[in-house]
Length: 415
Image (cartoon, rainbow, N blue to C red; front, side, top):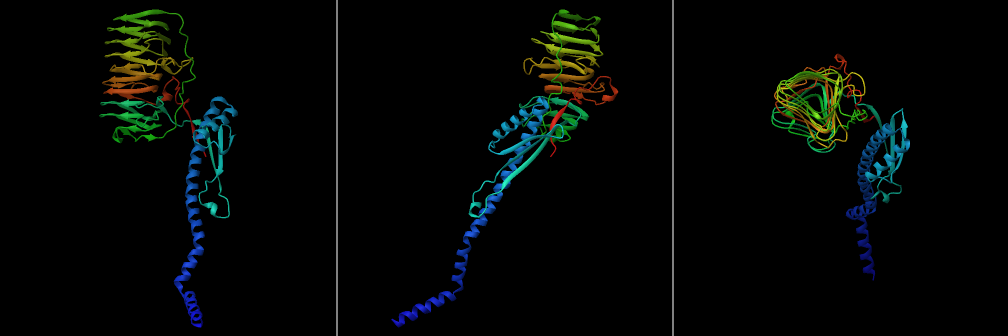
């Protein structure tokens, strides 16, 4: 028995003196703390990601609320818009505030507890994450001479062959969210002060000068509030001029208007309603007019300038259609074509406004180069062949008002 006791005592003392054993004990004692701190590191990375998602939601909600308020002046609509945005982003449970500050700026705040996976092992609660965004209606800050309103499909702006847009002092903008919202093929080229697209572009950077900016804010139709003219009655029906020299007058042209042969036609100032038919000009005709506007409504009411037609138009300087040369009925069939195929379109001073249609330019020469300025607001813009759309921006040199530069607004994050 004595031998057994000594053996136990000897082995016990040896174990206590064994350094490897003490390390194991120390590690075992520290293990819960190591696991907790590792869990905290994991949770921290989750909180960073969670807060980033919240900030993206707050930014989107503030932008949407600022737009809603600018359109309705309603605080209730502002709140409703934010709630809908939170729901769309899967964060409807987040606590939030919406407030109008500094006149037209909208502030949105979001807060919610940090997601906890491991931090519960520690004797404290996860943090409350908070974010803030402020958005406001602002002048777009851009001199937009092309606005393609197409919201989502490809080819809001499309150039092929040797076509060019030459706009060194203004912005070419496409609202499409598509990855080919702007497309440039073959030897085509777009030159602008800035080239901006809500989605993205295709064709390679060699087609653009400068490279396009992607992820731009949508530009609201600057002419959406323009009143459409009366279309009642008929001044002429199926009116056709062939190889004559004549001055014609404003009114409703039922069945369209045809000019052909070697006609030389002057349009007296005013509004010409092209109703239920095409405005067709062919051959070597010449058409000109100062302070004229053309409104297209009804079946087949489109624009077609063919061959070597000489075109020289300026928009009205006053009245309901001040600043607008061509204006398409907002209830027109979607994506019908308005074709400018002439090689002699020297001046289009004012805005071409085709919110439902495609403006298709197919020419072997410059278009609108003699204008002090030209603004294009269309659903889609297409250029083929050797067409060169020259968009000057000498607004101060013209008595025609620019209806796109002053009216183009966007929502911007300001904080």
